Image (cartoon, rainbow, N blue to C red; front, side, top):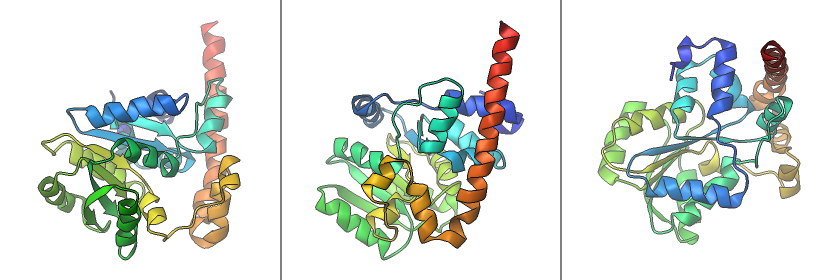
Length: 256
């Protein structure tokens, strides 16, 4: 695979589109998660949404981390629009906040590490998972430098590491850990999920999530912080979708 920094935007978009594993249903997701949990190697599960897609165009290390993930899953309405625009079935929405609990259900009894956010949310997230029967053996805040996490993880040897420190740091950390850990584990780039479990962030009502409007709900709660990400970012993303669609149809015409 070429390095992300060597790819022009057209090639980068195609590499990301081809990398995503489009999941048909819950049973398919269960098979993926069981395979990851049974692997004899470190396995990275990452998610790509419109915001992540935009970051790839300006952060080579982040794009490289996504492309090196073992599984890259579609998250959100934006990536659904992208796939539909080029005539491909987008599969089900694999939003991490909804699907990581599905993974943990299959990992009951496994040793879990929560890496990210800060107190008291880490402890509250630990309490939440413990009440559901999970075995959280390590919690670490999300403000160390990337190198500092390796000895902590090595000593604890969790089976599942949930990273919740946001993009792009968590993705870069996941690759750093995979390349240096000497035992098998599943590393999940979970975004805000630890904050959700710890009641730092409120989720949108279910009906809002069902129509793909959680981004708007979050924007209403934090307009100043999220304006660039969701308003300007969504506009930029849709413009890129239009360009990618044009390139796809041009390629079809040229091959005809």
